[in-house]
Length: 194
Image (tube, rainbow, N blue to C red; front, side):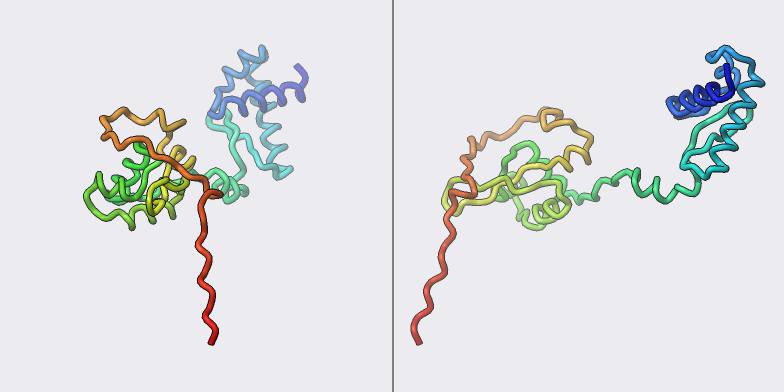
């Protein structure tokens, strides 16, 4: 196998592997001598370092691994930084659980189940983008109903709401939603003549 082709094969294997690969294993897979693998991998490593590429071939005893360049660490970290789940208080977690299971749910429904005022918890969950407004209930006062967001699913590692564990729920009946277009906005009273 020609040196350039051998280097391309080593590069592809190391990229696909994502972890270190023994030189002997590379030699067996590429049907060549281990000393040829070492020479080709070392030359490829030098070439990538000399060109200041974003990737490097790291030699670990008699194994090789493809890694990102140390010079690019800030960019890699910034892009791939895993999102830390937002910290939730016990009251916020209770509120979120109720909304997740009963969605769309009103604040009054949450408060009825919890037995305490939940204004702060609902506001905090909105700020953390774990819930969002989903319309209004078609009853006097037209309260806002809430549902969970895609961020909720991502944060808790769910593909859909159906992945939530089953619980025994209280039956509140089916809420009737009103589209925002159907809502009437009160006109301000005309100013009285002075």
